[in-house]
Length: 245
Ligand SMILES: Nc1nc2c(c(=O)[nH]1)N[C@H]1C(S)=C(S)[C@@H](COP(=O)(O)O)O[C@H]1N2
Ligand SMILES: [Mo]
Figure: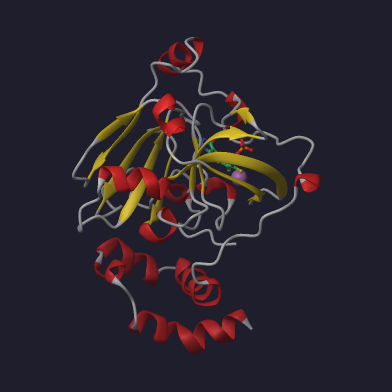
């Protein structure tokens, strides 16, 4: 069914595409193997909310996956100090670059949601996330009309010298109401294993898009010049950029 509707309506959707379609990277993505997933999901799901769950459905343990501790000198120093010196840097194609402390992020309007995290490795967990919608922070920074993607840079490397974990999403997901810069899991400050002090929640995509240990957020016009050019740490190593579920 998905394959048929992808073939039948893919052209329609492309025809009606928004300003995203003018970006060279975006055209590259539409021409790639991601294309069908991206177009079919957007067609069938639109900007709908991901399913939310009840407190009774919470997983007893929300495991840690990938990096469970960045363990760099810089991160260890921030961690030892309870992250009071940590700042989220927001820059790139924005009118007002920002450096926000955890206290400043906590003072912004908060959203809490209970959602299911699905990892490609074959496990899921339901957790209660609290944080500030990414869109709220972007509104403060004012992305310029040239911005097409939001890139999120993390504190950790999975292998020494790999340039660090990073991820990117388009502006539709960036402004989606459930897309959070999350600082709490199950009513407790984010543990180091789950991305302290701040991680992304982008609920309509798979686990690897949910960047942990956030240090910097950048609005960009093109993903080709970042990392190895595919829009994320795992994308650079062969995963799909659009990991819609
Ligand atoms: N910075 C960073 N973010 C990351 C990863 C990572 O290794 N480093 N792993 C990703 C993967 S594959 C998954 S499934 C989730 C795991 O989140 P958790 O540790 O809270 O379970 O984080 C994602 N974000
Ligand atoms: Mo994952």
